[in-house]
Length: 534
Image (cartoon, rainbow, N blue to C red; front, side):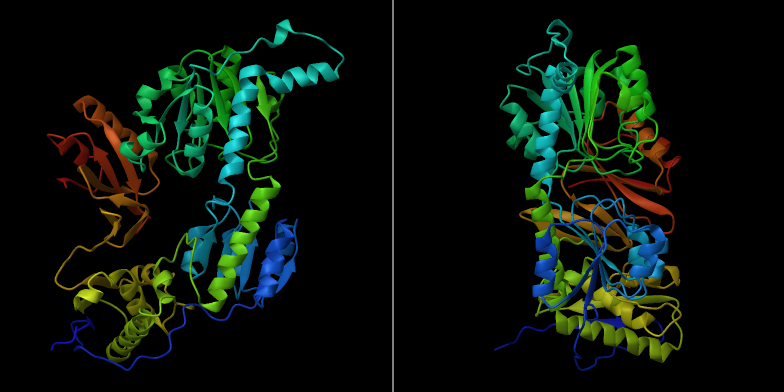
C-alpha cells in the first residue's frame, strides 16, 4: 500500500535540495492594541474588547494627532474620513492590520501598506444595501424633483407647474458597475418598470442576465439611457468615466447619479452639461473634494446632493462595525482571514493543513540564504505530489520571507515578501519555466490569479477569446487605444481586468467577441501582447 507523497523543493544554482523539521508558523505577531480613528457603531468596540483587545477610540483626529496615536497600535480601523497615507503608515511602528469598515479602500495607501507588510482588510458587503437604497432614492428624487419641491414649500410657495416630473415606467437605466451595489439597484428599479442595461468588465454577460441587466459596450450605452448611475471603484481607468466626450454621446436630458466615489464623474464636465441642457439633472452623494469648496455644482438648481451618506444608516454602520471587528478578532486568534485586500497568501497561513508547509517553506528559504550568503539571482520552487500541486500561491511567498529574513529589508512577511524580493532583484519562479502563472478554479471556471509576479485585482475567467498585453501601469490612454483598435476591427470588448503594477508595468486581460486578425498595431503601443482562445 503506497502512501501519498508530498514534498516541497527550493533551490538556486549554488544550492542542493534541503529539508528541515517543521517549526511553529506565525502569520502575524500578537495583536493587542486597536485604534479606531473614525466614528463607528459601539458594537465594534464591544466585540474587540470581548476578544481580548485593548481599544482606543479617537475620532476626528488631525493628521498630526493621528501620526502620534498610531505609533504604538497593532491595528487601525477607519471608515472613509481618515486618510491612511504613506506618512501614517511610516509612523505606525507596530501596525500590522488596517481595517476599513466599508467597501472602498481609496483612502488607504494599499501599496505602502503592502511594502511594510501590513495587511489591509475591508467589509465589502457591509454597506451595499444602504448605498443601493440611497441610489434608488436619488433616481426617484430626480424624476419627481422632490427635494426642490420640498424646499419651495418651506419658502411658503405652492408652485405645482414648476415641478413637473416624469414616470420611471419604461425609462432606461444604465448601470456602470454590476457588483453588489449595482445589482441591488438593478433589481429594485426593475420593480418600477425600468429597463436596466449596464457595463462591467469583470461580470460576465450571462451572470448579469440572471439579475435582469443586459450588458452592452459603453459606446452603445451612452445614447440609450434616460438615467445613468455609477458603481465602480475609483481607479485610473474609471476616473472621469463621464466626461465632456461621453456626455456629448448621451441622450439629451440624461440624468446622472453618483453615490460611488467622487471623480468617477468629471465635475467640470457635469456642470457644463447641466448648463447646456445636455444633462437635465444630477444627484451626487460624493465629490472629488469632500466637503466641496467649489459650490457651483452644489448650488445648481438641477442638482440634488448629500454629504456622502451612502453608508450612513444605523444598519450599515452596525453591520460594517460588527464585520470588521469580528474579522480582526479572528485574525488575532488565528482562526480565519476574511475580507483581504492584499496579502492573499496569509489566508493559507490560517489553515491547519497548510501551516506546517509554510513553516517548511520559510525554513528552506532561510537555509538557502544562509548558504548563499547573499540574495541575488534566481530561486526556483517546485512541489511534488498532487496535494501541493496548486500550493505555489502561499509557498512561494513563504520561501521569500525566509530568503529575505535578516536582510536590509525589515519586517518581511507573507504580505510583502514577493514585492521586496522583486525590489531586491531576486527572481522566484516555478521549476523549468521562465514564465509564471498562478491559477485556481471558481465553481467550474478556471481563473487566472497572477502572471509573472503581477496579481490581478479581480480573478480573470479563463474562457473564450482573450487578448493579454503588458504595458506601462496606470495609463488610461493604453486602454482607450485598445478599445479604438477593437472598434476599427469590429470586435467587441466583453470584459477587462488589470493586474497590480510590477516594475512600473501591469498586465491587462481583455475578453473579446472574436480574435483580432493582426496584433502588429497593438504591439507598437505596448511591451508585449498575445491572444489565446480557451
